[in-house]
Every structure is written in C-alpha cells, then in structure tokens.
Length: 310
Ligand SMILES: Nc1ncnc2c1ncn2[C@@H]1O[C@H](COP(=O)(O)OP(=O)(O)OP(=O)(O)O)[C@@H](O)[C@H]1O
Image (cartoon, rainbow, N blue to C red):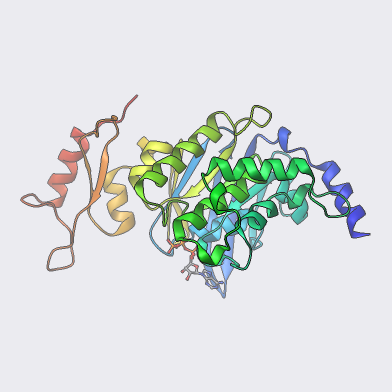
C-alpha cells in the first residue's frame, strides 16, 4: 500500500521543471517564542544564497523549516508550483537535499551506507538500490575526495571528513536545490575553498550535463566566503530579515557591525579583487574600535576605500 503511494507521488515530481524556491512570509514559533518572523526570500537555480547572522538569529531554523523538519506557523514555501507544506517527504527529497550540522548525525553507518542513503528517494519498489544508484553514490564520494573512506564508520572520522561525506550524500540525492547548514565548519582552509568552489560549479554548471544548475542555500559565518561565493545574501538578526540583496548591498560594514554587535571593518581589496572583512577585538569597555581611529571614522574611511570587483 505505502509503496504504491510512493510510486504515485514520485510520478508527480518533476524536479527538472523547478526553477525557483520561494520563502513567503514565514513565521516560526518555538515554545511560545517567535524564532522567525515574516521571512521572505528566494533562491533560483544557478544561484548561491548565503544565510548570515549572529548566533541564535534563526538561520538553522529557517533551513529546518524549508527542509520540512518543522512546519512554519505562518507563511508558505514553494518550489515552482509545488507547495512544500503539502508535499510528501518523498517529494521533498526529490527537490531538496540537506547537509545538516554534524551534531545532528547518527554515527552508526559506514561512509558507503551514508552516501547510499542519498539514493533513498529513487529506490525501486522492493527498496533495493540499482547498479546506477551505486554508480552515482561512487561518483559523489569521488567528487568530495572521500572514496578511500568508504568502509569507515562515521564515528571514526574527523569532523572535516564527516562534512565531506554528508556533502557526498546530498550530491548523490541529485536534487535541484541544496541546503547546507554551516558546511565549512570543521574544514581546513584548503577544503573550505575546494568545497565552496565546487558548490559554485554546481550552481553554474551542475554535477553532470544531465542535471545542470543547482540552487544552493548555505549558512555561513565567514563573511569573506559570503562575499566571494554568494549571489545573494540574507542577513538574519533575532529572527528577522535585516537585509536581503546582493553581497554589495548587504555586506556593508555599518550594517554588519550593528547586526553582530562588534565593529567590523572592510579593508582594501585582496589580490582577487574582493574586500576583506575583519572584526576588531573589544576594548576594555567591551566596545570595539580600530587602533588609532574612532570606529565611525574608521568605518567611513574603510567604506570609501573598499571596492568590489565588477
Ligand atoms: N526546539 C527549540 N525550542 C525552542 N527554541 C529553540 C529550538 N530550537 C532553536 N531554538 C531557539 O531559536 C533561536 C534560533 O536558533 P537557530 O538554531 O535557528 O539559530 P542560528 O542562527 O542557526 O544560530 P547559530 O549561529 O548559533 O547556529 C535560538 O534562540 C534558539 O535557542
């Protein structure tokens, strides 16, 4: 019975036709607190959206609301014409793959079993994986350079290795949209930039020619990654969308300093043409100021000196 329902809902899913994920006026109340309030934003195929904001702002909650782990108290989330609130978990899994924070993981599986779980939405009526599923899982592991870890258990891996395996599972799911909650946490600098460049490639070209242009929504704490890799930035503060737009529009030191409660300066361009964001250490009163300059003066001079590449 259940299997037939699965077959029917699968037939209704057309991820290829899904061009845009829309979050419309979403509010989430947890234990009587409005953790998200009237959030609206969108993610198109081919785009990377960075979700930034201080601890506790609601970033993970928004990822959980979009992925269906929790139900918004108000508002809607659509992919194309599909209302995700009405979609079965099976349908959602054909549209969205999620890379959660590592702390949310079961660790008893091997790497191979974990990546193969990404093929669950495509299993045949007997629940078996096909040679094609296994080939796709192998490719996904190779893409994150983790083939050599296949037989290891997740609880035997370093944080960075687990992060890459989770990305492989999401890639194996072959969905048009990817949601990643702090994907660069635990990764060393080489793997951070490799991962982000790979996500950029997935957004621009897709993993395979048969599945082009993904939409990527990711929580980032490093503003220097957001400025380089995102097409749009959503700044959440205390459950509200403080700013939404291009990196040039949102990543302004005055806005960021107010949002994070620390003086953030934007310095001259790095060799690749992007500005650098640096939080200043607090002084004895707990405030942060630039050495030798008042914060305001520093911020205005930093703004006027900094430029974004075209
Ligand atoms: N199940 C829950 N019940 C009650 N409150 C919750 C629950 N989950 C999260 N919260 C609260 O909701 C707020 C937003 O949490 P969330 O994890 O979305 O923040 P975040 O922006 O992802 O933070 P961080 O950067 O620290 O990961 C926090 O104040 C948190 O304490």
